[in-house]
Image 1 (cartoon, rainbow over the protein chains, first blue to last red):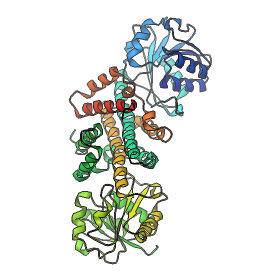
Image 2: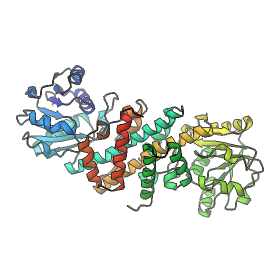
Image 3: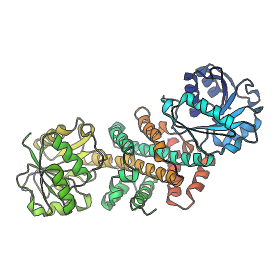
Image 4: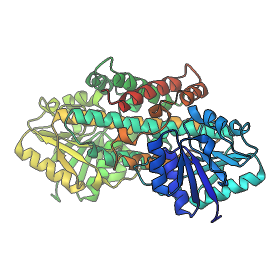
Length: 260
Length: 260
């Protein structure tokens, strides 16, 4: 595996974090393609690889192509690329593997179930990687590649991956947005966000030992209308935050009654 | 402080966790009042204290009364209690300290900014406690009491505490509900919730080093309409989960544009 050469389509958060993990594992990154020249160059400088903004110049010596593009542009880029039946892996939660079929005979998926930012280093070995491939042989290659960078490699069908992605949007993006609204509330009142960190940590820690519905506390699950009313007043009726507060509280209450 | 005797009003999650911390610190719990006999007895067995369901039988030897009642019943219980000007501390995020003024000459607040469940042990020493009192002397007592059980004791006005509580509802209760929805999505597809734990942990860890708005990833902040549309279809248009998905995505987008 030490001579394996990988090329990247895309130079965003996912591409950057995955490339960093590959580099650590001794896998060669030969080239990056990005529509954006600055991003391509930054990626190239970080990983000592070639770069191009012209998809027709895709490195023909790379053994595996990793596509880490925004879903909305992926097909467009794949359409213009010459894969010559090399193994192409996409990294998207919500694209079926079969979307790659028109472009190459060898394809698969390597999907990291994690929030990845260029600015935040992460121990990639604990990132769960969900893999899929169009043949047993390709599956072996994808698994080997995945196991080079993570301890947690699991197979998932395109349908399962779609659900994993949707669940991840709630557990990560939406939970993080709750932190963002909390920060704004505190900032408006000259209070530092840091005072919430023990609470945020414990909320995450709790669901390691209790199911989330059982871990729930606060005014919504107690159905404390008194507090709920005060909070909506404080947010300002008609604001998006107040609307969110009402809807989430209603949903918490429904879940706590187990009526779903 | 070793001979200090404390009585509790309420036997819920907060009362139980605070009592456990007091017990560890060598503070005597003399009595618990609860409307619910079973809860009162369970609390009494756990902390070797007296119990009553009759507020007129409040222990007159207790030095401090800790009120850990649901906001909606607090005033009703206080009204029936004979405090005889003993120091009464409430623990509520959204009740002003002055709400206690009609019932005793000595009052204050000890507010733990944490999610507390009877079923989940916690290291109380790292729980931030926000304190307030109606006199310098009482503030000294509240601070001393608080410092017996936590390293993190800060003063906060009733107005600040109200904002802290509202922020905590978002950062904890609403974030936890996002976990609950994620769990439901996975369960429906026979996938275990545990695969999300590294993601949940990293999402919490990230905001220790990046502001939440900067830490955001996923389809909403990328404005990936393709994925957003698929996810709403998957949740089922018209469901509460789909409505939540749309509203939170819209709010993420607004925050990321910094247009607030």
